[in-house]
Length: 78
Image 1 (cartoon, one colour):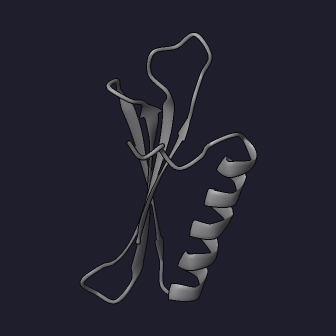
Image 2 (tube, rainbow, N blue to C red; image 1 turned 45 degrees about the horizontal axis):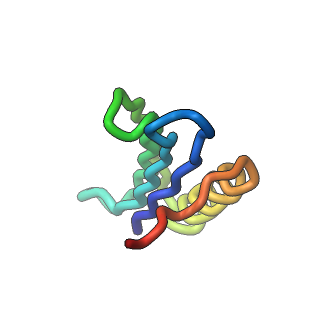
């Protein structure tokens, strides 16, 4: 599962972004990867590992919801 959200910044040519990825690893666990930064610039990556898919999905949804409350939206389709 993968989602990309962007937060436009007035007066800035590149918006901030959040990329969330949820993937199952080879041992049956789940890894939530969060990449944040400015489009075209440096980014920061954080990873969390979960043993249970339910916990991983809950963390994914909580993170997505928190960022949407801060103005992060899906990118506009052209």
